[in-house]
Amino acid sequence: ATEFKNDVLIVAGDLGDTFNAIQIGLKIFKRKFRRVFYVPGNHDMWIRPNTQDATKLKFKDSICKLLALLDMCEKIGAEMMPAEVMRGVFVVPLLSWWSSSVMGAGYVSDDTLVYDAFCKW
Image (cartoon, rainbow, N blue to C red):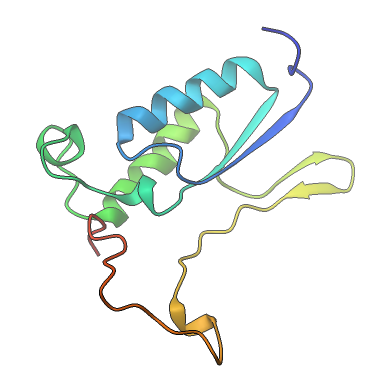
């Protein structure tokens, strides 16, 4: 319970695919680490039907879920904004989204695959 109390953890996305799962995971990490930085991944932004995200919390879209994640992180002490973790050392979380357009020449897209169908924009 105390082994990592002086450490910083960076959770780089895909912690869970529901708000509740993400919140539980971050709370566990907060008990173990001095500081926890979190950047949502594509699965974190999903709003799957028949989950609390769609039925109870009723996120209108993935942007609303992102804003709720920012608020939740602030309340529990997880960090999603840039911060200095020691003199001259900064963690700078970046919100970004992957696109095949950045892959460059030679990349062949498979249009039969549907990525992030549960994201709503």
